[in-house]
Image 1 (cartoon, one colour):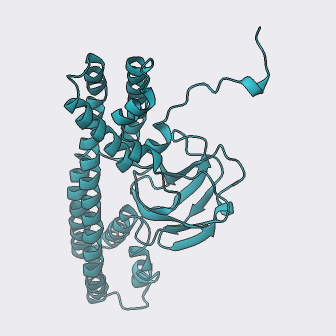
Image 2 (cartoon, rainbow, N blue to C red):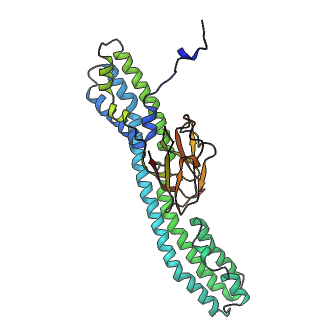
Image 3 (cartoon, rainbow, N blue to C red):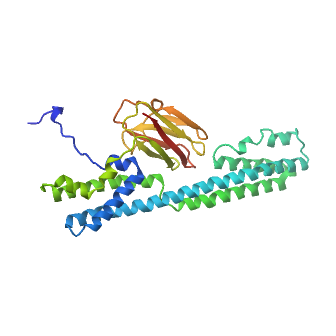
Length: 331
C-alpha cells in the first residue's frame, strides 16, 4: 500500500549530468564533444550506441557554434569599449574647442549663455552608459541651437554626436550578428542536460543485464568530466543586457568569500542564490559597476539553504552587457 514514510522514498529523477554541465559551459561542451567522438568511434558495436550519438550530436554542434559566437561577441564588445575610450580622449579636446567657440561667438565665461551650457562642467560627458554620454553631446547641440549666434557651432557639435553614434552603431551591429550570447548558450546547455540523460537511459537499456554493467557504462561516458566539479575558482562572465545567467554552482557556501570585479563593467550587477539556473533568484545584493568588491557569502543571501546551490548574476543595464570576473575564495 502507499506510504509516506520518507525512509523508503523514491528519489525521483537523478540526472548525473545536471551539476557538471550547469557548473561550467566549457565542461558541458567538453562532455558532449567527448560523447560524440567516442560514440562515433564505437557506433558499429550496437545500434543503440549509434542512436545515442545521433541524439546528442545536433546539440553538441549547436553548443560549439554558440560558444564560438560568444567569444567573437566578447571580442567585439571589448573593441566597443576600446573605441569609446578613444572617443573620450578625443572628447577632452572637443569640449575645450566647443567652449572656445562659445566664447568666440560672444558669450564670455560667466555670461548667462555660457553658464547655461558649461556651468555644470564636463563630468557628465564621461559617466553613465554609452547612450547617456552621447546624449550629453547632443543635448549641448540642442541648447546651442536655441541661440541664433551659435547655430553654426550647434551644427558642429551635432556632427560630433553623429560621429560617436556611428562608431557605436558599427560595433553594436556587428555584435548583433552573433547569437552566442549568454541566453542562447544557457538554453543549449539545458537541452544538452536532457539529451545526455536520454543517452544515459539508452545505455542502461543496452547494459542493464550485463554482469559488467557499471564498468561498461563508465566506459561510455566521460567520467573524468562528470566527477571533477571544482568549488573554488574564477569565473569570467558575460551577461547580455537585461538578462540573468548562472555564474556557477556552489554546494557549501560557508566560510566563502566572493570577489566581484566590476571595474571594467558597464552595468550594475545583482548577485543572488537560486534553486536552479532558470530563475534569477530572490533577494541577493546589487553591486555598482566600476568597482571591485570582496564580500562574505552571507551578503548575497541565506547560506544555510542547501537547495539554493546556483549563484546567479543579473545584468541591470538595458543597453550594455555585463563583463566581469567572479571569484570564490575560502576554505
